[in-house]
Image (cartoon, rainbow, N blue to C red; front, top):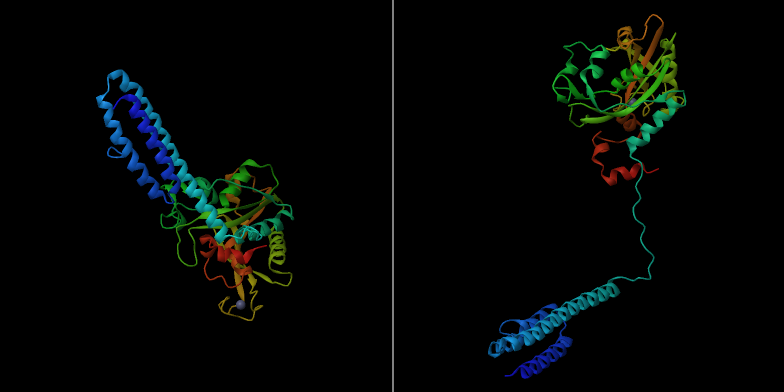
Length: 346
Ligand SMILES: [Zn+2]
């Protein structure tokens, strides 16, 4: 064959391919057709072998014609497959979707129950003049224990209870008290703060979570006494649990307060009659508090002869469990199952 003959035959085959391509309705059929023309043993592949008979000059021109034809075929194959996909989508959409129906609204997020309760509690204290203070979650032994009057052999300083980053030195705060220390060192007197935040302990069982939320409060001024503490806590309890809820204090011990007390509220379920939730006592422990130990004040450079203060601390999870009846485990608050969180939508 001479070059003209070869090119005429190539054009014929190209036209034949285009015609055949129109008839294919699946991707596989299109790919098979492509192979039947372009593969080494395909129609165009076989024709290309006749290039061997040509002179180098002729071969160059005719070879160029082959390249152009093959590129055109490859492109038309890609376009045909795209067209198939597009048609399939259109069919799918028209079969399965009625585009005239109104849309379905997406699920909206809402505040986490712990956040709701935390904001509520903080609001009560800010309305009494407390300022919100914050501090780091990774703390030093000094701020978490030493400056709070914890003796060196206190069990809380044990690896069993505390999550250490560097044993004996750097740790995840076990309470919000380091924020009290930082506030006393940084703020001018008088000081009146609440510190809400995440705290960390090694406990991990149905009634404890290794991370939970606490709010601590501190007031330091001239002439602060126990009556002020009781007044502030009474207001808090009435605002959060109801104006008729009684409170009582029992002596207790904390390294950083003297005297120290545990504060109970009358059981909000049985109103003091005794039930399963209050272990038949009629009372539920709600927080710890006390007058700031003079050693703690002196440790941050506050003259304990002139100034005195009170501090308190409570678990947000505990308040949330009391407010939302029927929560079996504190861990539910941290698993973030939408079916659980849905209940607290506000
Ligand atoms: Zn009860």
